[in-house]
Amino acid sequence: MIEENVFNKRNIICIDLKSFFASCECVERKLDPFKVPLVVANPKQGNGAITLAITPYLKKMGIKSRTRLYEIPPHIKYQIVPPRMSLYAKKSAEVVKIYLDYVAEEDLHIYSIDECFLDVTDYLKMYQKTDYELALEILQVIEKKTGLTATCGIGPNLLLAKVAMDIEAKKYKNGIAKWTYEDVPTKLWAITPLSKMWGIGARLEKRLNYLNIYTVGDLAKYDRGKLKDKFGIMGTELWNHANGIDLSRISDYKNQTKDQSYSHSQVLFKDYNEQNIKLIIEEMVDVVARRLRQNHKQTTLVGLGIGYSKEINNGFYHSFKLDAPTDSTKEIIEHCFLIFDRYYNFLPIRKVTIVCGGLVEKSGVQLNLFEPLEKVEEEAKINQIIDDIKDKYGKNSLIKASSLLPDSTAIERNKKIGGHNA
Image: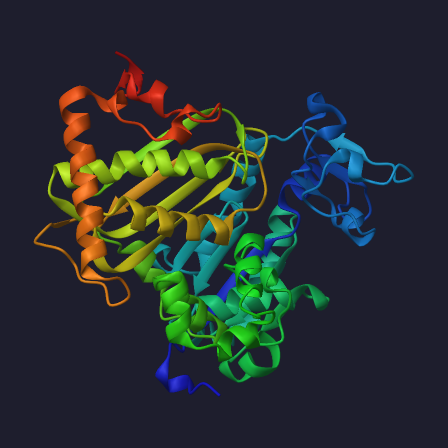
């Protein structure tokens, strides 16, 4: 059992707008999303188009949110409408304005176009309400002013508020679920499959299953040191989250220092997926890591951003602080792959961003308890030789064999300056 006084004890509200895109389309058409079979998808793509959203009515019939049109049973009749991102952005802004009627901007974290966190800890006395009562009022105001409905999770930290919303809120008529630290063993640990847990994607779930970890409880009871060895800093975070521990606060997102960073973005010429995108990530890390070494810098934070295709117009960006600074291509690639495996949702990819932040001057070789010094020095020497050859003879003078594959973009990008033809 986790002692509450050891960890964050805030009053966090996490709100998610139900079937947001589809609900916006229904509101504009004066339709009830709970009574109409409506699908948001690009009709020009034919039967293979991905559904970006479906109404709760269709969800009740067992249709999944992200599916291909041809996967919807033929006996189910539905209306297809094309996505209108400007409409969704407008409706999202209307809802955010409602949040700001209740909390200051520094206590609001916009997680996505349809999901937000509110820290109401310092407002309950002023409103003379419990966090549950305040959440109920906010949801009612959203529906009254915008016509949109929402679910809500409440918890002592961001993690438990989010998971309470994801796992339990939809079971209640008013769409609100509240979890405390006492609920960790009975509710959090019971979650299975692992991909239902916030921050664990299908690919990471498979890797954890190989370790005989099938429930969040299994993860919570697994040796934290072994998770750290296997997944690095992410392993520690996985263990913490499995035990309901989340020390982050909304102010952390607001007050992140703008450290110097090196980044590299690429808009892809076609849709990529989990089978070929890692080649692109490796090539892009090569560029950023080489820049680190050229400037005698090391990174203490690695970030990966994935942008999905235009029809979906969404994606993710996540970063992790490292235990020790590095300029190792191999190590940065490993962190990027871990982020990708954790958050990728099997959607078509059109943009990749690599970020190395929290830069520090390189002052020597950082020892690794789990890797021999000789191996670390050998990798550094190899990287230096490769950098020297490229500096002298050009970026394409030495390339990996994988750069000859059809999906590679490295050779063409190396011919350009600042993203344009040289």
